[in-house]
Length: 181
Image (spheres, rainbow, N blue to C red):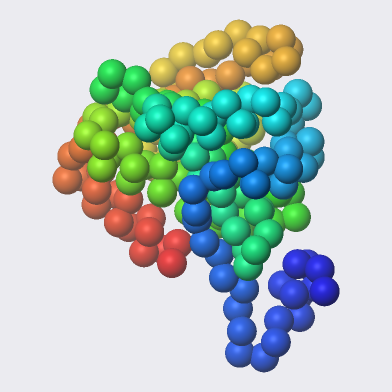
């Protein structure tokens, strides 16, 4: 039975479970299938394998979102001096608008805080207003534009969330987590 069939017709009383786990090489094939569906110029297996290696050296942090056993989402962080940079967050189009990206972002924000960072940053397509709205909910604010950043055709909006180590930001994440659970 396919994952879509299981979601649409779960056994009575059962709800498919979503879990975040560390990204491993065994997940790359599934991640690439999502990349192909959501990005005009997807990352390669080599790039993801390299990121997994960097995560093993504690220079990155990547997670995959599993629905039962199927990879439906993923995201990652790159670490700098006192900030963490969100490298990517993606959800399989069949599973978008179900809160999975929000759960990935919550995990990444919490990892950044736990590691002692004071700011988070990312780039998002200027056309991706849904993602921008989610990032604003997490306290990200526009800080600039990177012209022709995506495929040398579309601009990226640079967004920052500052003071992520503050009690106010913790309260923001707790409120988001409460709605998400």
